[in-house]
Amino acid sequence: MFASEFKDAVRRTPNASTGERSLYLVDSLSTAFGKTYGWCILILTFTTGYEVFSRYMFGAPTDWAFDASYMLYGTLFMLGGAYALSRNSHVRGDFLYRAWPVRRQAGMDLVLYLLFFFPGMLAFIYSGYGFAELARRMNEHSAASPDGPIVWPFKWLISIVGVLMVIQGIVEVRRCIMALRTGEWPQRLHDVEELDKVMLAKAEHGEYQVVKDLEELGVRKGDV
Image (cartoon, rainbow, N blue to C red; front, top):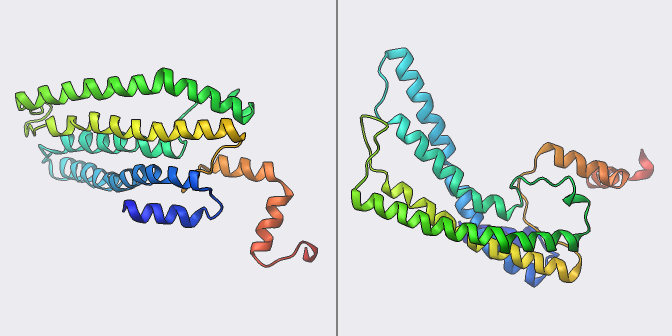
């Protein structure tokens, strides 16, 4: 899946520079993890639906649904972190940031990555390793349900996700440096956008965007 994601990224960005395409390698790795484990949402939906149906229709709640639900949601949430970072989709308070010139944005991002992101992620990896290793030595099982499945393999996700975030963070730092040099943000892969972003982009482009859309349908400006 990683190889197919990278090939698709190159195909969708024909005007990207060699430097930008080198960033897509890590972006594609993060995307592969995010999209693969995104299927957890379907398993989670089925698990929750089955539990509700079994509990209220037959009066027979399961022993495993609660543990399965938080493990699946935790896996989905954690392994989507690097994917969201590669798409610049994490929440930020950008009411001032978005009005800044690109070089100021890149400089601010670079400082924040170096001062907060990397130290935080390294602490995340270190503490997560100790947390998971202690659980492994104890052969820890869940105490939240009668079934009591082992949980220490699940806790290894903390360190694994931390490593993925650091790798993606290095790519984001490279993007900041490239933006500082050129005054433009490197191209970034996109696959899903929120409706408000699409509407804002169309409003900013104005008539140009409308004409472009019509031309793609084979309608010339003079025909309307």
